[in-house]
Length: 417
Image (cartoon, rainbow, N blue to C red):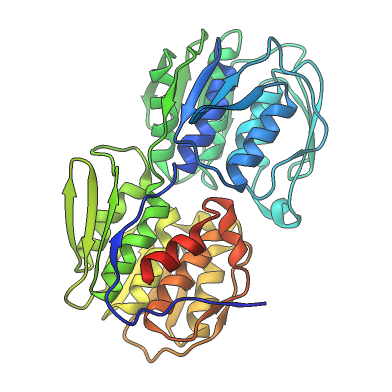
């Protein structure tokens, strides 16, 4: 049954506390599982993706339990092989856990949601083969047997996902001779996510060098157990801040970090370029709408997760918005470029795909419709923003938001009023 999304009868104003970063949560869980002792994660995201990560690491022998206001993670003496590890549609699970599995005492098999087999996996699995693992399959489902002897180099094409590089780097210090990873393909997307990975490794005492733009070297050694406070998810925060921009309101997100490696941090610059006012403080970020938004040309290669929110802003702005640098999101939870083009056209927006993005003409006459989520949480964000200005928009699967923010419907309704 489709769900009608709130329409803004007045400017949206308020403050919204956003849960922890998915990207940081799942990296922190993996690094805690690989560490030299127990550690506690506070502020970790509670969502389907993080639940899948907890279950996957648990299947490999990691103890993860609630401890006060945090998660206590205790690594095993030796990872154990596991059958039917469920990756759902979570890119971080399907790309970060298989490298951990090559450290186990036996083979592991991985499964996922029906559409999980459509997500690119070949380069990561090829990288694991180069490290000595026996891998059966090139997409989900697949099976991995640990190496008889570990190798120390992998050359892969990560142009479809930076997670291929991050997944290998996370285990580099645990390999006998460390690890050198080389990217062999074209433009590498989402570099800030790789920087997040290397920074989190360094914070745990791991030596990571980058001799050039496409090579990373991780020295062998211990990964120090480190208690961690997870930042708010700035990509999830962007949809709430965007609500102020499209309705002439004012929305504040507390605990916005002064500096962050999350690509979502770039949203403030983008929405400011489109005409909103942005107030950055030491402990918060506030966006205020006023004059009509204007279309822009924007390269989102470093922050492709923002594409649906920026597409919604473009549809509601004056002029043309061109998003580039995001060809790789055709392999996300769904083909996001095709999905965005289809759903924007469904309500009357003039939208078309380009080789590496979207062209959106704002200022069109828009009409209500039932929009499709494609099991993709970010498509719900698109629909929610459009509904603020177009009364009667519905979404066919509001539950898709459980991937990263299960309480999004209640938080959204509370903010919109």
